[in-house]
Length: 266
Image 1 (cartoon, rainbow, N blue to C red):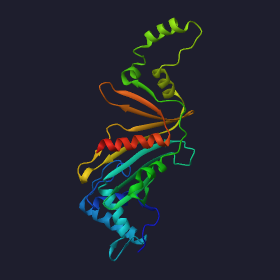
Image 2 (image 1 turned 45 degrees about the vertical axis):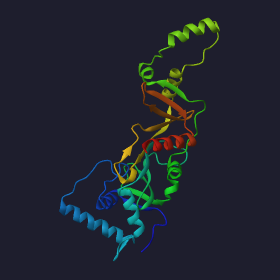
Image 3 (image 1 turned 60 degrees about the vertical axis):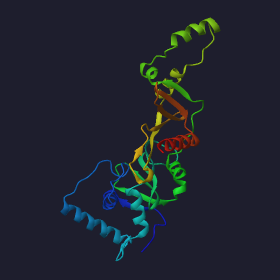
C-alpha cells in the first residue's frame, strides 16, 4: 500500500462519505450543504468509494491506508481550523474562486483546497505546528495598500456622515483659512477605499474545539479586498460602539489577526 507523501485528490462525495463513516460531517469548504441517503443508497456509495480507493492503492485487504485514515480522523473532528473563501483575479496564479481549509485533529495536520464548482478536493498532510503559515501560503498573495489603519464607527459608515463633520468644517475654516486643504476624515478615506475598483477579495475564519468539546468559531470574519492601490483588511470590532477598521493587508497583518482571533476562542 502507498503512503500519502504528496497531495491526494478525491471526489467531494468520496471524501464526504469517508468523513461520515468516522461520525463527522463534511466541513463547509468541502460540501456547502448536508446530504441524506437511504440505507441502500448509502451502502452502494460505500462500495463505490471503497472500489475507487482500492484502484488508487489507498485500500487493501487490511483496510484503508493508515495515513489517509489519519487524515479522515482529523477532518471528522478537527481541533483547530483556519479556513476561507477567495474570489478574484490574483496575480500569483491562484484559482479565481476557491476555498481552503487547514487544521489538525487526533490524526495530525491537514490541508485541502477546493476550487468552486469542481467535483474534486485536493488533500495533503501538514505539520500541526505550522498550520497558520501553511494557511497563509494558500491565501492568494497581494500587495498591502499604502497608508495607516482607518477607523470609524459602524453608525457613521452606514449613515455616510461623520458625527463631527460640521464641527471639523468650521474648525478648518477658522484655523487654516481659505485655500488650505484639510486632511480627509477617516470616514471619507474609508468610503474612498470601499468605492475603489476591486480585483479580488477573501473571507477568513478561525474555529477551535477545545479539549474535543463543542466547536467555537469567531463571530465575525476577517475580510480583505484587493483594490488598484493594494490589499485592505476589513474588520468589525464589536463593543459599546461597533467600530469598522480598515488596515493595510500585509501577510503579517493577516497573521496577527488570525492569531489574535484564535487566542480569543481559547
